[in-house]
Amino acid sequence: MEDILRPIGIIARSLDSISNIEFKEVDLTRGQYLYLVRVCENPGIILERLANLIKVDKTTAARAVQKLERNGILERREDAVNKKIKKIYPTKKGKEIYPFIKKENEYSNSVALKGFNEEEQAQIYDLLMRVQNNVEDDWDYVKSGHKRSY
Amino acid sequence: MEDILRPIGIIARSLDSISNIEFKEVDLTRGQYLYLVRVCENPGIILERLANLIKVDKTTAARAVQKLERNGILERREDAVNKKIKKIYPTKKGKEIYPFIKKENEYSNSVALKGFNEEEQAQIYDLLMRVQNNVEDDWDYVKSGHKRSY
DNA sequence: CATTTTTAGTTGTAATTGCAACTAAAAATG
DNA sequence: CATTTTTAGTTGCAATTACAACTAAAAATG
Image (cartoon, rainbow over all chains, first blue to last red; front, side):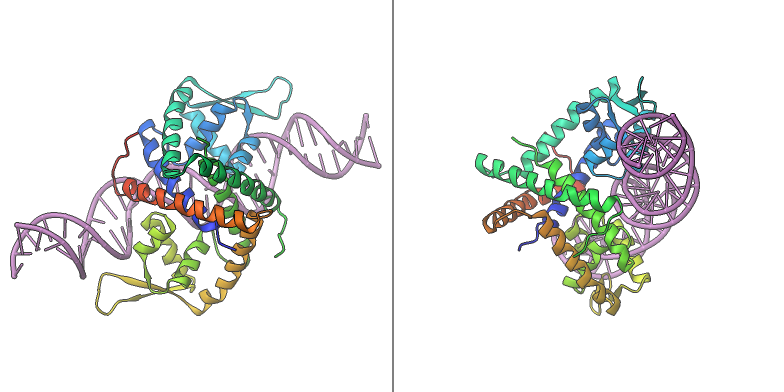
């Protein structure tokens, strides 16, 4: 059984560090782009769901969102009925940065898929979605304190 | 063109945080397993090459190796002919931890590929290797200070 | 409907991460 | 073979990241 963990890690770290370098141009620091795109695409999302979407610790997400709020890129509004939650929205400034992130990500994606015909593109996408589903369950399981046995 | 960056990021972060939690059992802190496996499989490797293998900043790798050396898991030896380089080796303790990491990684890999038949396994591996090759070039390019135009 | 459990969010603390800026050795160049 | 460039490694910052431990509201339970 061939190892796919290493190439996936290498690809993810490569593209992430490229993005972090390139998004300095729009005054984003390390990792911030992840949260901004997700909030723009899911306005009103709450912290816990955002953290689960990105697969990052909720305390990490909390501090990232706090900082993006201080920088005027995101804002949090309290809910009228549920006093516990804070809904997260992009500000005007946040919405203006979004297209730049999208364009960069689309470019990186096209670099990643260079030389792939349409069938191969569809293939890798489908296979990766299945891997994602497989892995998400274990992430929930381990992050919530359970022990895998192997 | 479907986006493969996000699933790759999600898969990578999920498996990395699972590993980090599970390797506390062998007293490894966040990320250390990455360096230890590579050094065990490439004894005598130098820092710069190690960083490039993992796709991590060389200063990050430097500090990780320093700490693993302090903890008696890796050791660095000076080269007889080249006074500039330091070759990195696993210690006895490092070699003893290695099988545990391998077993965990193999298990995570089998979870990731759950439901994949042999053909699909070979397929995703081949496609990912091509993506890795595509992406590595841009990583080198951007990390060495160049600007991509898109 | 009182009580237990789960959900959502926060702060303390301690670590990794990485960009700048820097040495010094090695390799390449004219 | 002197000098320029590249390679290999380090330290000073300043930031992200995440495990613990904690509130408090909401939901589930008996």
